[in-house]
Image 1 (cartoon, rainbow, N blue to C red):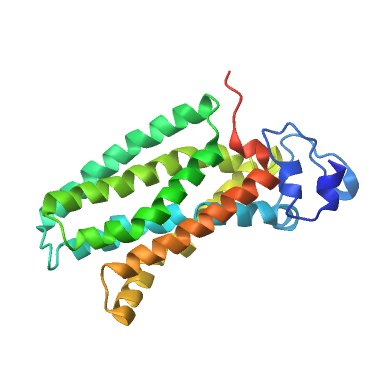
Image 2 (cartoon, rainbow, N blue to C red; image 1 turned 90 degrees about the vertical axis):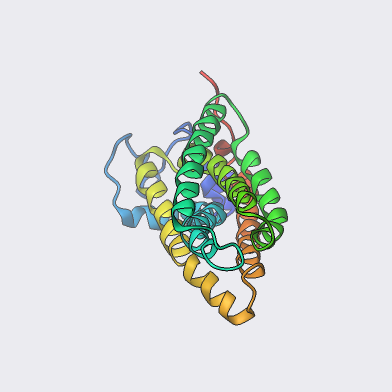
Length: 245
């Protein structure tokens, strides 16, 4: 515990996370009691590094979800795809349902000891490689092809979303676990995800390329999340794996 504390705030993520298996220090080194009320100020003071790591870890899935569930269906209704509105709605509903099933599968695997962070790192690596080709494909394939490409992105995001709760809640000690997870998750979904359709629209207007702009944005987000995943492995190793019961 001492080396982690000496290494700075970011390293304290490792010493504070992991299923409450490590003593939680209160003011002046006094151990906090389990269930003690902890104000948000203490979360930001003592565990801000964990909040930032989770924020980065969820960057790709937050931006990707909003782009593929809001901006993309509207874009597919335009040329050259010209997908009917009702068909884009059906595509979104069906693919979201499949994504939910993937989330359940990812959660099941996580509960049985799957290396959670490494599995997400693999998804981020794949996403960084396929994002640009996939969005180019949306402008060149048939309606059925667009549906399948959209499903591919949803499958990747479903896996990450199924793993995120167990992974990121393990970053924080028990006294700030819910507030820490929810703060970072909502920051990522709102500050990154919520504005991502606007960012894509601005990039398309600036570059003139409907195919490249969203793909490149998601590549950047995937690389950012890959870096955060590696940081989690170093500073919060307990977030990587659960011990199956």
